[in-house]
Length: 78
Image (cartoon, rainbow, N blue to C red; front, top):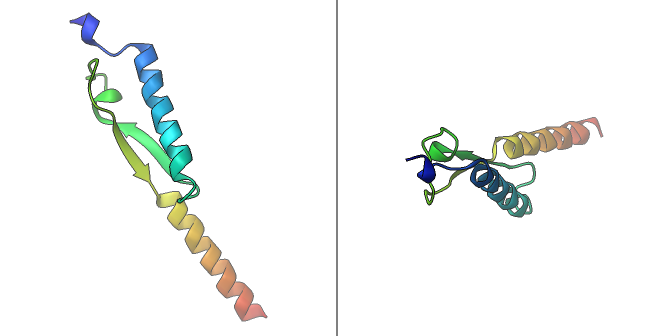
């Protein structure tokens, strides 16, 4: 059974995959974060299992709202 479990190297490769996807997504969504979830991170993952990823755009939204607020504040002051 242990021969089917994800190794430390497999886990690191999964995080690397998320990092590479995040780099590509950042071209369209600055400050986005791609996080793995599911069996890859909860120790139930087996060799050959899928990689579940979550694209977190919350920071992007917060940054956009901040930019809009700054723009409106600058416009009002001027």
